[in-house]
Picture 1: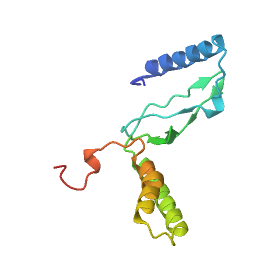
Picture 2: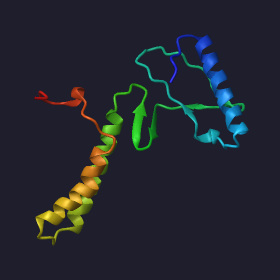
Picture 3: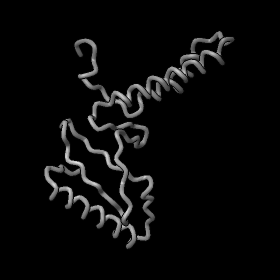
Length: 137
């Protein structure tokens, strides 16, 4: 991650991208440029936009990127990530409810919930005080 405060900083980042591509070639690694994108983390109303490129292909600018199941957006507030996780949890919970109507054992339902729904809710999740509704203690 690099802070871009001027066009000179953007030129330095472009130089870093060129060096990264040369390093990939030297180490015989393929870089899929179509999957590469630009995501600027900022709260500024007028950020510096620069057209970055790799091997003369302009990189597309994105408003959000999902990496290893975590959705990052330009403001780093994770509301889109939380919305995705919650909607997926409701879908999984509906699946459990539809397919376990005839279950009589509470333990089996608890294991299914913990395995399918709760594990997805807790993946890459840490407690963040700004999302708490009440006091922490």
